[in-house]
Image (tube, rainbow, N blue to C red; front, side, top):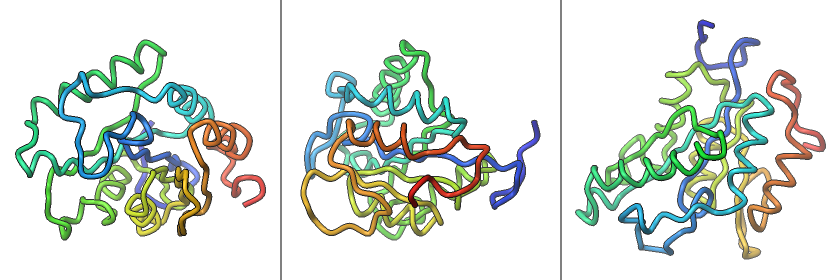
Length: 196
């Protein structure tokens, strides 16, 4: 099927954009980086979240800042190996992302570095995604800002009661799983999720 340009076209597909660390895998903590495949640990609930998203007909795209490359903390080869492990673990569950977008720059003015929306916009152009009907899921306000600047609805995973501009806040992936399962509508139904 030929994809169309980004926008609210009946033929454009919505997507769910996922931050990586803290959403897909266990976060190494502030200022730290997953530097090798051995340090990549999939969060047990994530495959179920991805399975629901894909079953509902959404595209699934990873959008991740990886400043560790710019800082010399890791190599491109290491990053590719980490993502290779991620893809292998999900493939065992019969799951896959449509794309993995990474920003390797340490420059906050880089258009692709979150909170800038460049990675989401690039994926939307590449795959003909409908951003107003899409979601960005992350664990920081930079993820939320990137999603909002791209025109998406947003979900923040946040254990603390800190302020957030996200459309929805959940405390953990168990709550995220429940929200996606009960509140997301199939991708072909372009109304707002129930209760939104």
